[in-house]
Length: 67
Image (cartoon, helix red, strand yellow):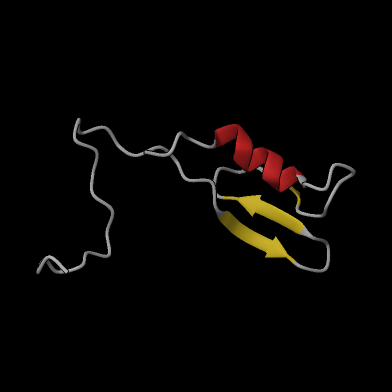
């Protein structure tokens, strides 16, 4: 440990710009396997023919480069 207290908040960007919108689940209906994202996207989390899901495709469309 470096002696600094842990922070539960993420640091802000150095240039003052807000962080991009995070795509996270707002609601999930287990029986129907339906997800609503905080951005308003609505779709299925059930596996499709490729083994992924509509939710995975949505996340990959908006994934930002890791730092």
